[in-house]
Image 1 (cartoon, rainbow, N blue to C red):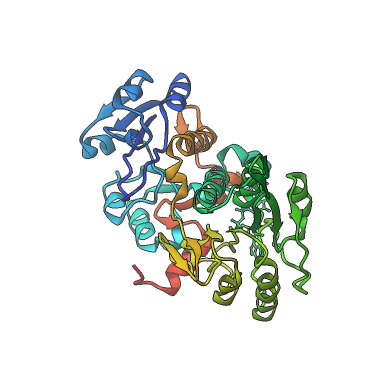
Image 2: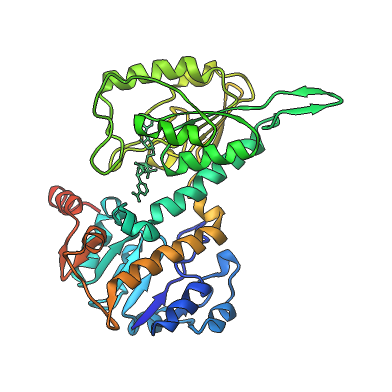
Length: 382
Ligand code: NAD
């Protein structure tokens, strides 16, 4: 079983799908590894680090892909990358298939069996493969550091000869994986933290991290779906939420927003008027920037000064934490590979919820229902 690790080609992506320590462990189980030269450079792993772990380093990508049984990546492949895979190969990558229909089409036509790390079901058995969680942990942590670095104030309370400094007030909106990590990180830096989520189930988790849970009743009973994700609020409830937040937010120095609804644009939580009511010098870090933003002012990939409030819309924060984000992603990928391979061969057991859930294409068909529906609706969509 030959596993190929590709060098990431997306601009700004520093992560790698498998790190040498994972390779060394998997080698003991009989896997062979070929690594594209420079694949680990973004996270300070040299070709010789990979060679020392027992991998073969290859400069020519065509040669790398020719005999690879399994190809692993971080970012979704481009159409060209998908086209260069060997017929019938297995691809393990973040796929975001709904946003990459043309790539899925190519993978399907090449009979590639594709597993998407972002579709691994979030059940207890698959926790070690949960790349959404591992990478959101990096984002939540980094968001707080960005906020702390651009806030013209201390986070902790300080009692000094030059007077007492009061702790910064931080509000975290959305307390999923990234939000909970943001709460924990802001607490470690000594801030006074409050948090809110549309799912009341997270109240206890917020409080156990030493933050205050802000109560708001959206007037809708069912705010959580079967998978534990938030459901979109009605337009009326969303408006009431925005109005309530407008009054809350004015009292905070920092707002970190992480609210997402799977498969939908990010919910709008902070209006322009709300930003304009914040104290000058306040900071917003909008982790939902790539999904349209939780804040009306946010622009993905940019930092905007609006009315003396700094609004950050960072993209791909895990890449800025490439060393640890890769280490964690690598463990996630290794978990999936070891689940897939039985007796030295990839075995696609469609009765296994984890395998079935993460499968996007197999034997020339699209196996992920929502993607299949989207492709049927937009047969020529690129
Ligand atoms: P996510 O990234 O989809 O969303 C982030 C947060 O935004 C969620 O907590 C969501 O409730 C919140 N949100 C959405 N709309 C909002 C609004 N209008 N106002 C305020 N908050 C809003 O979520 P995630 O972090 O990927 O995961 C969240 C869920 O997945 C949780 O239930 C978590 O427990 C579950 N999960 C389970 C496992 C497992 O192994 N069982 C692993 C990871 C995550």
